[in-house]
Length: 338
Ligand code: PEP
Ligand code: MN
Image (cartoon, rainbow, N blue to C red):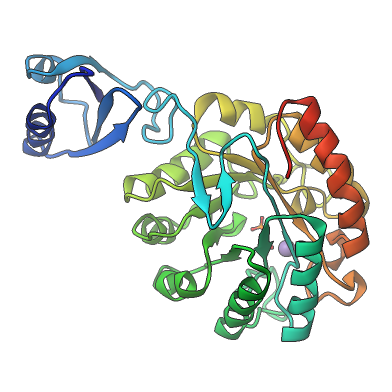
């Protein structure tokens, strides 16, 4: 349920609504528009009636939200979520590109990768330090040492960073070094982790689970927003289907569907979405054409020597060649890649 306040409603009247919500064992959450404030009622609203709020002075209207997700929904917040990470705007007309290797492997490797990301024109630097690997015998990442290397590279290049966090207890530590917290596909429904990221002051990128529906993804994002963290990016990175010639099946139609139902920025990851470097460029272009707000593209200075995801990693040269082509696609759909 949402309580839409009159444009002229006073702060006292808004507080009256919030107090009423608290007295009904729910939590109020403000959504500030340019002119009006919407106060969202979080909790079990089934027993509540619109009349309980309609009689409060300053209330314009009360609406029940039909869908199971609330804070992430366009019904509650019609305008697009837009926020800045360093100098980069997420959710605006510009389309930022995140790039870097799957994993931080050494100071030298990451340094070289970071310089290539900078040279390519991509705006955000990625690198995994805690890796969720299918096999326990595969490279598990450099841990905190890897995060330090990312932070150093960020200082040197001026690029904001993103890296995966796998455990709730690690959120404060990863937040110390990294600008955007990535929740990987395998952890999309790790509810303690979602709650911990909800408490964090860092923006988050939530990747779609391997077999998650769009609604499950939106409800996972709802956990983060309901914890108070509204700066969330959703990332379509492919889902598991019967097809084996690609690593995952990138659900391109998820992008317009998400854009219709949520105000959160939607990114596309053509690297995990396809699994092969050959397919990354065409699918990246498709992502922009279909309305993505950003891309995540894996790039490695020497993909054949990568400790993870080498097959899907672009070389620096391939990334340099791709970004000007992406700019043209962006232009065709009235967006900008700087
Ligand atoms: C990654 O970004 O390297 C990664 C592990 O992605 P996903 O969680 O989408 O598999
Ligand atoms: Mn990867």
